[in-house]
Every structure is written in structure tokens, then in C-alpha cells.
Image 1 (cartoon, rainbow, N blue to C red):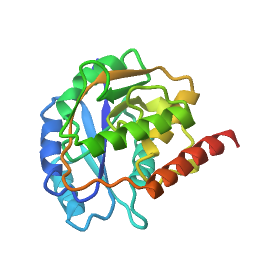
Image 2: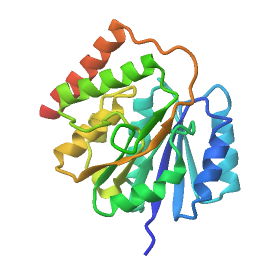
Image 3: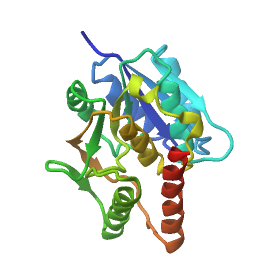
Amino acid sequence: MSQKITVFLPTYNERANLPVMVERLMALGLDLSILIVDDSSPDGTGDAAEQLAAAHAGRIRVIHRDGPRGRGLAGIVGLSEAAKTDCDFVVEMDADLSHEPEEIPRLLQAAEQADVVIGSRYIAGGKAENFGWLRTLNSATARWLSILILGLRFSDPTSGYRIYRREVLAQLPWEGMISPGPSIVEETLYYVKRLNARIVEVPIRYVERKHGSSKITIGIILRWIMTLLKIRWAAKT
């Protein structure tokens, strides 16, 4: 019996990449639908998403977010909405082609014996390509903070390529989630872990697609620490 899948794609300025991602997802031949949450992209990603939805009637839903932008805010909307569908599994992944959709069948196979599957760049068999030294440092710092503050002892707790059982997502306190930015992946994993869910990691190939300078400052680190501390505090109140 085939499993029903909802693929959640948060988007911001992905007009060029989104059609390619959708084409590759549809080519998998799985029983899947796609939920796109666009953060009011100025490059017309929202319009491109609507065109794709029209071309794949009934298989793509588009949510246009207004107000403050943020990966976390989009994640809260997307994952909470996906949890309301009738699917069996929810796939979360980036829309910029850093996450390869062809990995999904292998992750789904692991999900048969788990509640959450994390696509890991750092366990044996995983790869993180096009990472410069600063990007590597940023990632290592985020992993260390996740372990130290939230107790997320995984090789890649900041990975945004995951598969969740829908019923697990439905148990999370979405209205109380507080991460406006990328730390939403850690916040989600933190609450999943508190449910004693079965969590496994599977190696993936991650290809960094974004170019330009990545700057980590003391201010960024302090804000990240404060957000993680707030997550931990909020979960205990």
C-alpha cells in the first residue's frame, strides 16, 4: 500500500529553482502533494508557485505569508498546516535544490521504522558540498549550541531535510512555537524528542547553492543562544 506524502517547501526568492524542484518531485512517481509557503518573495516566486499549482491541479497548494518574514515563521505555518492533511508522512526540505528530492524514497524507507527521519550531512555516507570554512564553522557552532542548550544529541540537529509522521506533527504545540528564523528546525526537533518519538538519521548529500559571504558575528551567536534558551524555558512553563 503506497503512503500519502505532503512535501512542505518554504520559499523566498526561489522563482528560478521552484519549477525545477517541482518537476523533480513529480518525477518520483510517489503519491505526493506539495505545500508551498512563500514569504512574500519580491522576485515573483509566489506567482510562479500559483502557475505550478494551476499546472498540477489538486496536487499543489500555495500559502502566501504577509507580515514579518522568517524561515521559522514559514515553518510554523507550513508544518502545522501539513499536520492537518490526510497524508501519512510530511517531508520538509529546502526549495533551492540544496536538498535532492531523489533522496526521498530512501528516507521514506527509513521512516517505516521511525517517527522522524533526519537527513544528515555528517554521519557516515553523508556529504556537505561547497561548504567554505566559514560555513562549516557556522554549522558546527549551531550543532554545538543545539546539544549544549537543548540536548539534541544528533549528528545534524540543524538539518532542514526531514520526514515526519503526520500524527507526530499533529501533537506539537504550534501556537506556542517562538522561533522566527532557522532555529525552528531545532525547536521542532526539541518538541518531537520530548514526545519520546523514534528519531533516526540517514546520510544525505547536501550541495550548498547559495553564494556570497556568510558572516557570523557575536550578535548573531548571542541571539541564537537567547532563542534556544527561550525554547527550553517555554517548554517547561
